[in-house]
Length: 218
Image (cartoon, rainbow, N blue to C red; front, side, top):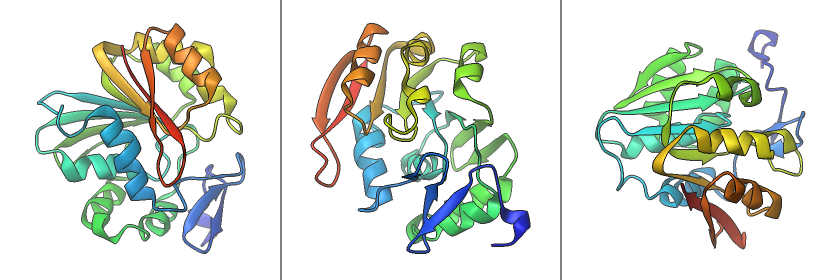
């Protein structure tokens, strides 16, 4: 990687292909299959794509490699919106290296990288916006409301700031009535914070041997 490709993401690369955050000592996607995990946790966890309709709004904490957006764009057939909050965005070169793990997504991934680092762009049928800021600062000022949330920060044990009660309350405050969330974590304090914010929280089978994940509805 050239020095110009370095970014605030501050990455190591496991097996040459899997980005790992040095800051949080956590990989960006499952070592057992990142795309399958995204489909299991974030898409199925929010009953997508079945719920999609024109104008449906998905929001996300933690853009990372953009894998969740790519997986959503692969199945979205109507015009929808997507907003993601990311404090430490990757460079275009880092995205390309990460995307190489998902060849079936390459046409969409190439389109994403071609628009990077613009804050707003179109990907398939999705009007996407990437807000490059700490969600704790940016979400309270955000004017939108999501129909579904992908809660995809690094592990709560390693990145507790993105799972605190105040931020989960902001997630609920920016969720449309009947809106949903899904996340890979089943940590008790996260579930309690989401329940306190107004979500009916339930556990579901996790991905690739992980016992549980969490999902819920406002």
